[in-house]
Amino acid sequence: MSIARVLCLLLLLPSLLMASPEQAAKRFVDLINGDTSDQGRVFADAFIAKRGAEGIAQLLEMLADDNGRLTVADVVASSDAQIRFLASSASGQWLNVSLDLDAEQRITGLAVRPTEAPLDPEQQGRTLAEIISLLKDELERRAQNDDFSGTVLLAKDGKPVFAQAYGLADRDSGRENQLDTPFNLGSMNKMFTGVAVAQLVAAGKLDFDAKVGTYLPDYPNETVREQVTLHQLLTHTSGMGLYWNDAYLRSKEQIVDLDGFLATFVDEPLLAPPGTEFHYSNNGPVVLGLVIEAVTGISYYDYVREHIYGPAGMSSADHYDKLERDSGKAIGYYRPPGADAMQSNQEGLGNIGSPAGGGYASAQDMLRFAQALYDGRLLDQRMVAMVTSNKLDQGDGFGYGYLFGDQEVNGRRYIGHNGGAPGINAEFSVFPELGITVIVLSNGDRQATPVARLLRQWIGHAKL
Image 1 (cartoon, rainbow, N blue to C red):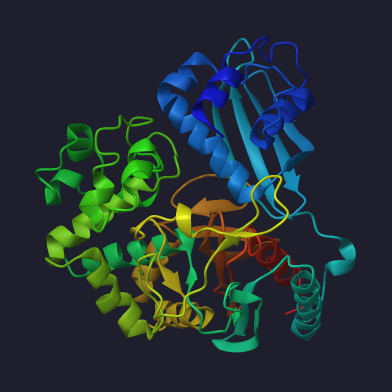
Image 2: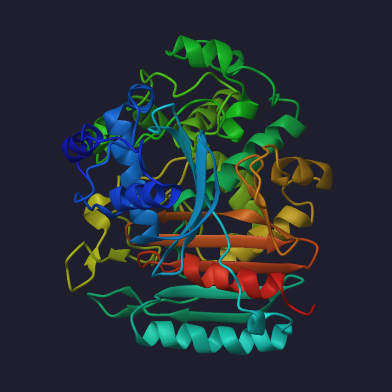
């Protein structure tokens, strides 16, 4: 979705003034879907000024890429100041969307959170053995229809009870996916950054409440340096945004370190005053990576290799550059709008991932990470609770810790993270009280999340 197209849509009249909540929800979803027939002005000038046209274009494109075509399922609450609705997609994604409105019913702010799909009563009360049987059938159906390529690992008390690979890691060579195939994790890498910061706090080298300038006294952006804390960077409340901007697109092939990422966003103004609003951010984890480098004297990449991947036994995990081939990593594939065939995502990738995402790991690696997280190899249990527990009041069973999600389904808590981009989709969920780990990694577009959500629903309503 181009900036010019978004600007055109933003400047169209009339506003949402006379729209019902259902109509307003549909107009917003139509904008995400790329439909231009509805000429409603959906963003107020204040919101445009805060995020910028480029930022709004990125946001809408990210929603479209992560979820596919959306449909309004149900308006669950509405008032003069806010509309909240559920939206679903044909691929099985569900979102809880809140639109903040001004006096003229134009959108001044929005929040989009993943949520669990309503569950058919017949799918409740199943045993783990029944869930495994259903999962096997579901995955075979999806694989036969080219709707799933990747690996799925379900573990109980650290032991796999289901583990299977599907599809091709490289469609040109015919190389098949395996359980030890490294997949691009997308934003799942944020968990490793959160753990790394917590390790250094435990070692007395960092303080969650300290300002960025404590560790980066020469950080070029004065507002970030003097006002933003590590806590805010870890909880996406720093006001920093996403580095998927024009500067990144121009330089992504040449970026080899965190300074290269920093140069793409360092001069951007904050989206909100630090500590006041949740704005999902990739810039924040990059700054955390720079803090890690400053206090350890080694690169971020070396730190996670030595202090997370190594101790956890994650032998296939790393931030591989896009041209690397020795690891056997999976190549991502997606289907462009209107295209019949899947195509490689390699051209769209940057040279290397960052502390915000883009590293690689296998399903086996991620199970080892889950085990190491809870058996004391990475953090003590007090610090695990600190990192994984909700720090924000998001409601609807959705919470966020220190670069970990903290959510629940049917009252059963799970922690973890997901990741997604064209040709990339990954899900990692641990139900700590149940001893169950769900890992779904895919090199296909939006193919992991529907499987993981279905599994979480079954587990949340299971007879265990």
